Length: 459
Image 1 (cartoon, rainbow, N blue to C red):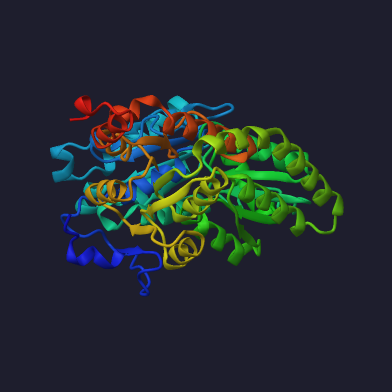
Image 2 (image 1 turned 45 degrees about the vertical axis):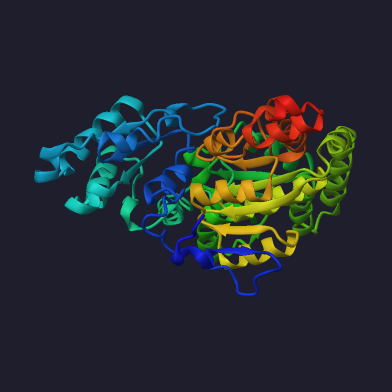
């Protein structure tokens, strides 16, 4: 495989390259990047706000990318599961779509009575120049609810730029609650999207150690909770790529400190609880409860993890995820299962992210930024990995190569966060990697048959 010249510096082998990896650049033309557009990044962050109206201002094709696409769950409102679009056509492109947007917003707000509305600008809106902000302002005054423009024209950048657009939009809600007093021993959970109900697991851990969760932004989020998020004492940022900007804004304007955490794997889940407990040092009982919770939860799952480790020791894995911070947790979780990470990459990692990845990866590990499908396939074959961890776009790559796959992205239906999530992760990895079906994959079939001594069949 010939790597494009403009991409060679975005791929390194740990221990063999001294120059830092090049990242945070636009995808190379012709590389068939796995990255998504700005609009995709914004809807990933905002759609889990369950009692808000989400209206895509653009062609119907963009809206098709939103309907129930995530595994984010709600404990109440289901409005967010509906996909609404202004369905711009040729005549709208010629004469403009502002009137259509206005009437769509009024009709939808009257019909569904949302607590707020988000309007997503798409590529065509940026081309024809609709003043989405002015329409939102007019409707907000008439309907007396927040109507927030999301400047997410797809061609403006990458998915990471969409994260920023989403943070700027949702930030307009924060601080608008009537009660402005701080809440004792309280946090906001930023960057967890309640995939398969994971936010509920995390909230319960914090409740058990005596910490109040003011708002989850945006897993199972409610508009009224987001409005009072400024009352929390601490922000815990799980997905730093999507929510670091929001945390920085709140630190700047409300002086709420932020800490980066992860809820995947035993080590990182424990560290997240201890981080919050130590912050509220005025109540030492919180730390004692955290220590007991960790001890009890690890005690429940560790015997099972030891059994999975016996079957997985020595196996190799490849990881390709959206944000690099998630990759840290996966590398550590795989080590606990006795597996080695041979390939690791992300779509939106920054220089510091990749530096930390190098620190925790073994020598020879291939580290890649913004991988193409061809590169990912080639590195998996070259490293002879037994498992690929990724999302919906990586699943066909794994199966076509006869490699076990673990979905760690938005579409999964089983929680992988928290202590119980680590057990689910270990079980899924073990079941996938040890499945007998892989012996029939072309790249392994000859090896397995030769091992049985059946030379005729191997030939």
